[in-house]
Image 1: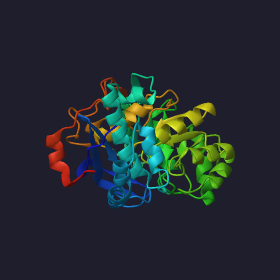
Image 2: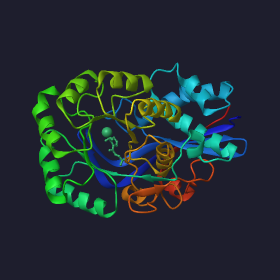
Image 3: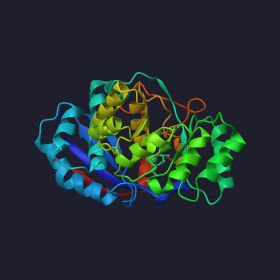
Image 4: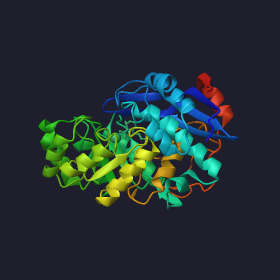
Length: 370
Ligand SMILES: O=C(O)CCC(=O)C1=CC=C[C@@H](O)[C@@H]1C(=O)O
Ligand SMILES: [Mg+2]
């Protein structure tokens, strides 16, 4: 596979709503759109790093730097036949997974376009339709959370995830259960806002039949999570703690979780996502695809990986129109039926970029050549 040019574009996309978590809030999503050109085709992906290092250590600027100085030069000076070669080539670079994933993802898209197959098929996906849920941020009041839950249940989303933090947790979950009943597929995401000192809060949350509690404890912990899991009947889902298949293996061995959230960016790419998927499948650990407030390009990658069979829990890939006035893919990524997205079967990611929209959001563009 000959790579002739790589284009990086930094985009600032205003969100239609303020998205707040236990670690901060987002009103403008920064991303780096990666386009890799080769043999008459172009592959796209995006970096999901945030503007500031509060979800993970990477930021838009570190991603740009790592790609420009270390990763793109490797792509231009080595033979690449398959996307797995990119994974191997980047392995000696420690961490910086979101930077790696964006380049590797664009090459997966390019590779599947060159083969004339969908990205989902190239990855070994089996589903033609996926179920999706929605992630609701922290709101100023519990009533505002309830209003959002009501709206999104009405849109048919198959899982409701709410963000919690100390002081905004049991009350929210109780109110949702009282208003919408036990049947609502409900989970809470803490983004590492708790410690073992909050065991009483976790035990209270345990009463509400949640599908899971996502990343309650520290972002770099799997030991305390194992202790906590032994105290709870609700499965713990790990997000921030899992960066590769070895982290997943250790967490499974220790009993730190019952579910894993696979985010392609956090684990360094689609190749590693597949490895984690396969390992979890062999251990009866269900997985789902987390969201990072992606544009349609990242959403398309999320759809493709979710087509693998052990993605049995609806992910965070809500429709584009929830986030953006105008997405950067033509027609956006929209629900085909309540709470369901189609897995495209056209070559690559199956979405065409909307260049006019990109023009409205782009703040910097650089092209790299061998
Ligand atoms: O709608 C989405 O894309 C999911 C949003 C979401 O829940 C998250 C986005 C970015 C960082 C985190 O706050 C987070 C998560 O932890 O899963
Ligand atoms: Mg999370």
